[in-house]
Image (tube, rainbow, N blue to C red):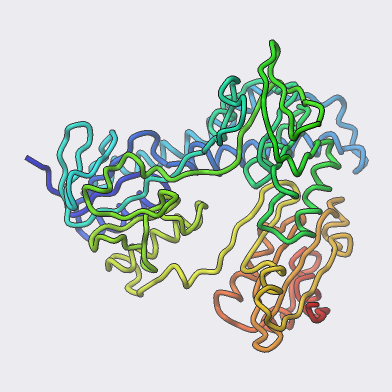
Length: 458
């Protein structure tokens, strides 16, 4: 006989635990099901461990630059075992904190195992039968490795496996020139590895404007990272001490000792038994949801990476807020995915903060627009810190004065972008920032100046 709950939540990633908290606070009983690690990708394989590693890499980089600031730091060495141990402690402490919260949450039952639908309201977890009037899916995604010639013959890592390294690779080759790959590229170069990034497309970070992609490439190459683009015919060959990769026909192969494949992700929806519940997916496996994150079945919702509406921790958490509001356990205001402004960051150093549309997307839309751009060499705070790479760029609708998008590639860019994001969400005109007095000396103080110096977009 099935155990009955008011709600079943599948997946203890970013959206699941806070939703369990809101539901139990409202008096509902919740079954929280997790087959692997509580905390999901962010806590265990994503943001928390990778940004902890980024911090260690930044410390090594700044120590090597000590002479630039009049500081003698001596020979700089990296103890990768200690770097890994620090990463595991930060990530582990976070995971254990979420586990403790769930285990001590009144009304919540944490169940370990793999969940599958047996009907619209019933699920089995390794033979245990569960039933609920509401079901929330928060099953996340995983890295994919495409079918490239020779890849199956060699050892390779994804974003999960590379976190287990406790030594610095001699030569790390990364397939994929987007966000995950580039963060690991810079990180391991700063740890002391030789690094080569191979991208099949014509440029890195293809979703960004050309000038952003070009600046990112310059930043990475300035640190000694080799970048290969237009790699249309990637193939691999196993060697005694590693492997060789040929980017395209007629090119000399590149020998490597470690390989990271970072070319995309797929949702964890293929083994949930969704067909038994009547839950629809698209041709890529993402669960189809409406603007309130409800699936094709009225009492089932999908949150986080599995719904195709965002692949970030912040979109997952916002999914929780949307769902919780719409089922009546959070803030009492109806909320929708279409209300949010797309935003994300690339956490290389300096970071890229992004909000809204690219300039190229605005240009293609045909609307009249203004654009402002300022190099970080003309930002006093960046000069003082000796970090003048990058620029800030904002694009504005010339008729409504609404900010359409922004890219802040530079020191503090991942924080500065929020001043723009808040104005965009509030649907205020750009003058709400351009006429605001900001604190000196900061990076943010040059956002108003940039907005005061805009010119028409070609």
